[in-house]
Image (cartoon, rainbow, N blue to C red; front, top):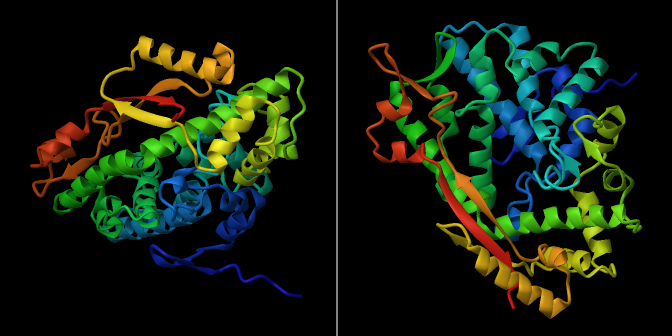
Length: 407
């Protein structure tokens, strides 16, 4: 009888070799819910700006697990007791923290499902897997939800200096080639400690934390909120909205079974049941891309043009401003598009629209990053830092955008 070797070693371009610590983790990685993450892009349509940004949520989740193992080793070395059960819970929780992401990051949340975010779906997946794995995920779910009595454990998964951010900044920086985001994750993890059940950073690690926060600010403006990425995501949201609208009017649109389910049914928080979860587990980027390729030939002007724009990277023009766009300017652009393409006002809003984006590298009002001084005193990183710009990083910067056809 052949048995599978479950102690595999994976080669990661960022950290080198990553080992899978036990058979439960191996079986979770092998599960079809987790394997789906191979087909979910980590950065949505950012590859339209940075051609190398084709890495997946699968990459990212494994990287997070690797960093969590490092963090546990460091904390144990500093005499923080973490049991074998707690270790497994932390590894499972961080491995599955993004399992609920839909195609192209947040595009689906804002178009064909109402009020169902990826965090909620991640939790549903974890609860489903917990039944399949005979309760092995119970503690991981408690930690993930912040219900476990050891607060620092949840901070390692979902805080301002968590393993999620520590991986995605370094990974996204690597795949985009944007060196400003390259943080020293190993140095940061080596400097962490626990004080009064809170995650803290030793004083000598303060410069690594400062670099982390600056990198986060720069990556948001340069990569995540890059104007071309912004307009591309807005277009894919509008493609799905238009498809849903046409289907509700009685039109038949060809799409995969999984995508069709969400187009032809009204799905919200209350109706996102076991059946919806099953079908969601079969939905990935490929469903949406194949739909775009099909819908570009549809006789609906709005749908076909939006699809062609994404597929051919012939996007709308986008302008970022420091002040909100005036209603007069927006109306003028709308009227031009209406006249040129003989569209209704509602149809024209698919091509002319405005919005806003905000960037705040550090939230000083929630789950602060604390520095443990040599004196034993614990202070917020802003007070501990001699960098004047750290206080500025805690203030949100909002920019406003307007999108319209180039011609």
